[in-house]
Image 1 (tube, rainbow, N blue to C red):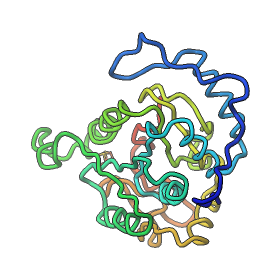
Image 2: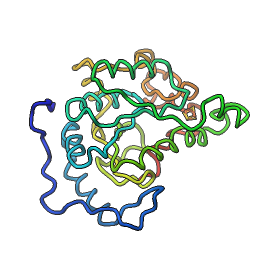
Image 3: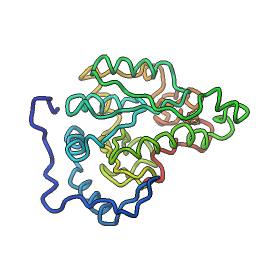
Length: 265
Ligand code: SF4
């Protein structure tokens, strides 16, 4: 673990080239990366493969802070990353996409994290409140069009926030699902127009929970009653023993992701 008083353990990556910068032709809406930048990021990702998550985060902070941010749904992975950032650089802007449909336990966890680490996780909300949104669509959209609901209440909000940053961290892991199996440590996220860093890409669920238990990191109590993966309450159910850890998300539909981690490569 990187202690606050220790020198940061940075993987030596900048011996060849500086990071190519995005070109002037980019639009203000979603920035794009040049082929050189994408290639440079792939090399950094390769070099960071096998590094400790703390060192990956320290690299990201060194290179991108203060234009480095983290989005978290306050899952176990997010709580672990926050515990690391609290030691590496607690001023990193961390936020939660507050759809208006989150479990009370999730919102209470945000407060416990703040008390433990002194890092207040900001809430970023969609333009419309839940009553306004449901009134506009004649009822809850998650029942008949969850893709649109996730877009409006998560993806569009992240696009808005991402425009102010050059890199973001996520807690996704390769062993969570087939759609995440190829997750690199570092890549250009073309969907949101910034660098995406996944410090826990190579960790397993067991690694995450070992860290939580070893360090007493706060976590959502719903994990103790059958919810290994938690999103919005209308789209999350408890799983049965033997089921995939994300089987309780959008159960009964073909949907497996909210859209934040699809189509970004
Ligand atoms: S998870 Fe469900 S309630 Fe939450 S934004 Fe997506 S569709 Fe809407």
